[in-house]
Image (tube, rainbow, N blue to C red; front, side, top):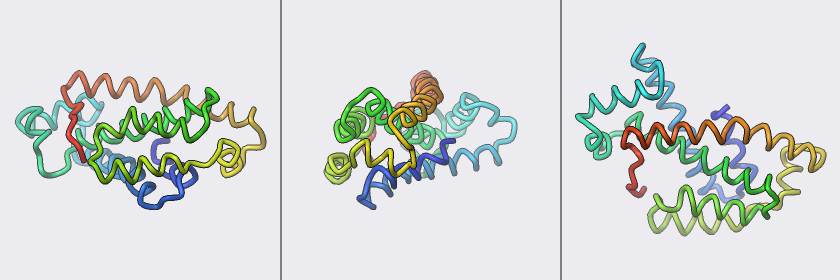
Length: 181
């Protein structure tokens, strides 16, 4: 399901650079997890076992944080941030917020604290360019607001507990780094 999320960004945002940044977090994270599953064997049975192995192999949490090469733990962190962003955005629309407000609120809360100056400017500006909920519904071929609410509700029922559980695991392992990208 998470591999389907990048396509949503293209519908929501018209700025290719922003779509690329947001899609990159998901695509890279999914690719890295797939690689870890293939290479780690039994050590990749759970996210916890993956994190434990990477932390061990990098000499501790600080080794994961300062690693110059991408790590599976960092990929999990950014994958969860990206999916939490889209989940919070969908929650906002579902709860009746204007799409621009929902996208800006989700960005300010979830991603902005970890973005450097230029990324903040580009992505922050793009949040204000998000189409209306009616345009989004049309782009997703949903016939009416009831159908959209049903689809959003099903998405939220899956993603809100998932992203919360992954964040709890990230925090439990000391991997919720506040480094900027």
